[in-house]
Image (cartoon, rainbow, N blue to C red; front, side):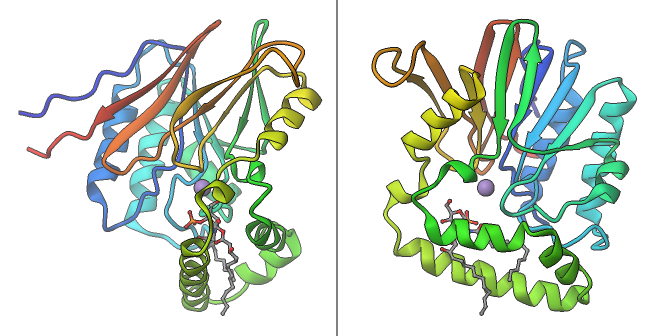
Length: 256
Ligand code: LP5
Ligand code: MN
């Protein structure tokens, strides 16, 4: 029997880091199932980056891309606003694919205003300021001129570059201390001070948690940082309703 996960009633639901790929049909199924089960109370659905393991351009037409576009398109048909943010794996997702999904591509940090409550949404990689090698790589690949040039290359060539980049990334990460690949606390505090927002929510680090940031010392008032989890052996989402929020996980269901 396939008992599907219940998604909490809330007007705003957020996910990130699904890393969808052809070889993980279990995650794709869980994602489609999740979109189907979003409650009628959900008005805004956010994907905060790394929806895909790798995105090499909107011209890379795959069955996986079709499946995702259909699932998100159905949400739009139900009146849900769908928002897509880039991650470090799918920053080449463009306006064409967003249009196929009926989604809005949003920049980070994105300010989500719900009455008096304000959340700052990010993928999370920009907060990893100790990872200077990554930030250099990021500056290169987020440059629009670099992106235009890269996207003008044949798809097969782009695939080759992506494989080399993945390999280089794996090798670099093996030699990096875990703390370097987490957010830098000063970067978090600076963001809170400069944005005036007391609530930050992001993914990327694959370290799901709710961090209460001290009201004493560096910040004038209490703040929180919520970290979404990646979808590997289970799914993660955050549900926001007014002042309330929950970080939830659920098991993937065995296929029937
Ligand atoms: O991805 P993950 O979680 O393993 O690690 C990330 C950071 N790495 C990346 C790189 C991506 O994995 C690569 C895939 C993106 C492909 C998109 C399109 C193709 C682009 C082609 C470019 C030529 O995001 C990793 C962080 C980690 O998160 C934690 O935050 O540490 O950062 C790095 O590993 C960066 C390295 O330290 C330095 C740069 C390596 C890439 C160099 C590419 C050059 C190509 C090879 C030429 C021979
Ligand atoms: Mn990421």
